[in-house]
Image (cartoon, rainbow, N blue to C red; front, top):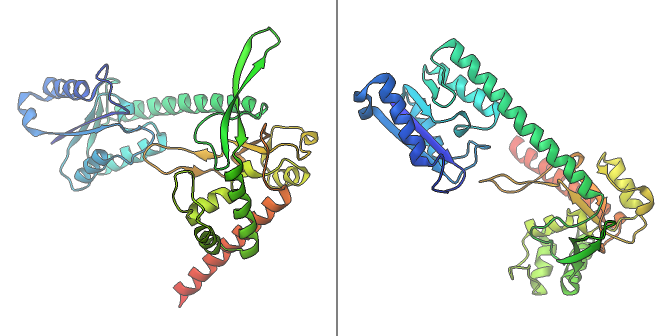
Length: 331
């Protein structure tokens, strides 16, 4: 039984469409195994899914069928249709080899039913990942340069701010358009209330209740949840770039792309490379040592000392919660 797997990140109707991939795979199977094999083909299609993750519905179904011994071969049009991650890909090939299921990529003409085919597939996968990592490094280098300007790079603005267009005169006489964050006073009042309330109560639940009692709502006109409150309390955009902020970042080995003299409390903090956004998954906050910190062009809300105090309370609460769970399990 042959499985044909096709994937495309988004629908375009051009180039290597889902239909084109499937048709080319069918032609390959017929050419190498005969027309009668058309009766023994199962097609799996994932459209609108990235190759950077294996969290794809049809892919999962196919792998379950492989696990149950229902497949003998998996055929794809091109190697990166199955995965763009060398770790995921290597693990996949191992799983298929353990079940004596061959993997065929017709574009690269790789077939894991032979030792040479397996070796060549691993080599191609390594170079594919090298290319992606090179691009990722280039993006991060560019981000570091942007960090020096303290500008807002776009996207959903944090509560309390809107995006303001700024026109800069360049040395060659040209005009350049950039953006910076501008405070929305009525929202900034809510941010101050959240910080004050949390420091007094040391509780996300009590802060949530106080916000509900005062009828405060988010930008989307919804009640503040504990998750939304925590996101605000841990976002360094609300911190003033003062000497306490400088010391906090240096103490936690966070990359700072502004001179110490700029941490005079006049402006707020911009944190670049802080989130990891992946298709099909919720946005994840990166480890602090991956952040790129710079002095922004906006006004902060709380001092570096207050922001650090809030982080200590949050960390202590988290530690206590873990301890309680551990004690309950032991009982």
